[in-house]
Length: 204
Image 1 (cartoon, one colour):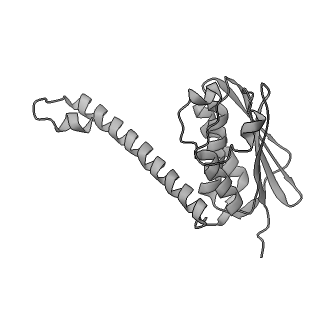
Image 2 (cartoon, rainbow, N blue to C red):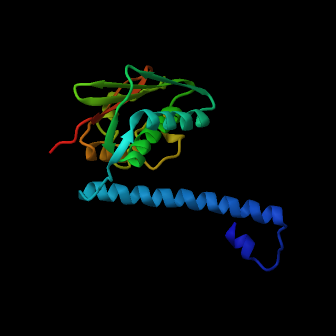
Image 3 (spheres, one colour):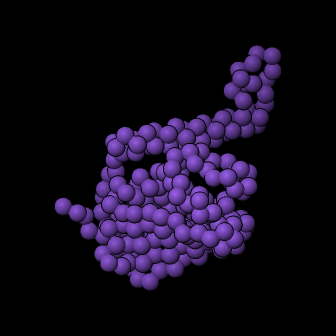
């Protein structure tokens, strides 16, 4: 699109020019996101990945990610289940939203409609979150590698879906940087549940 705009032998009208520039901006932002993803992966593997903690209202944060997910869900129903009002914690809000966005994007991409459920509760001094879908599920032999960098599995649905294979790797890096734990539970044909914990009190 840039090459077309730079050509001297054509003169696109204003509407076409703006359309080309909008497409260029959109693709540039995608490239920027991919580069940042690669850099984050490198930082995680080298042990230099860092987060910036502040007071975060988990209730408001969860509501934001749910609203964004609903805007992207063309063929899904997004449900939220909470047992209590979520507390304010010290965490990196932007990074936590990134975890939720990645998990919800995966749930939407790898399930054929149905319901995506976000569960949140507090137990044993930790906030517990789970994102579940009604997709095809993940074979047991793939679950052990699902958080590995660039691993995308061998399922037909995965082969048809674009992705870098880094989203879950970064989710694990972010969760572990907060002192939490992330894991997956899945049965083929029964959907998947991605869960993670977040300590409510910072360790010494």
